[in-house]
Length: 197
Image 1 (cartoon, one colour):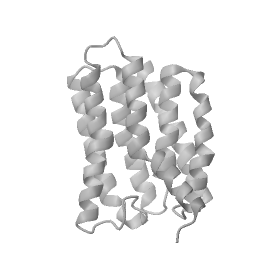
Image 2: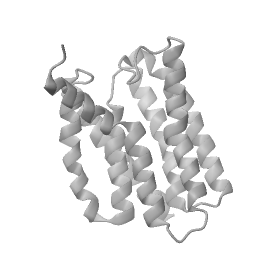
Image 3: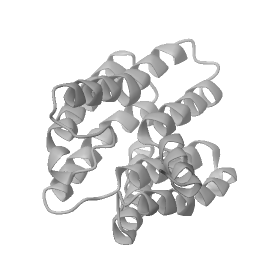
């Protein structure tokens, strides 16, 4: 029987998972940051399709045909195919953003999601990095770039998510720490450069 602590850790892991965090952050960035742009819902549709709909359908399909053992893709060896597909999905999303003449920040999200997924894929060949932490901290980087240092308080979620992933034995300390650091540094530096061009 699972303990209350296990259920708490599992709830935190799902509540701050990539398929929850990314779309929530995109909603905030687009609806608050570009509220006067008449095409904002088109931007949001592309971001949602790339960050939520496609990954969820992909993971559901792979689980159904037995290519992955669970929805969190716990085993490193099973992550290669979904990551490869998601690179293509983000590149396609970037092209749609270009056709919509979207703000550079928004097109940059998808461009660097694709670039960073390549990096995660390469790391995954040898080591298991925490995609949960990578997504959380890269999302915090995006919010800081859009809304400033008022978003720094979100870093309180980082140790909470690290604890839950380690308690669930999904990752060890270094896998969560490296995922968190790389996620923030890469996305902040990439988007800062991209919007400054």
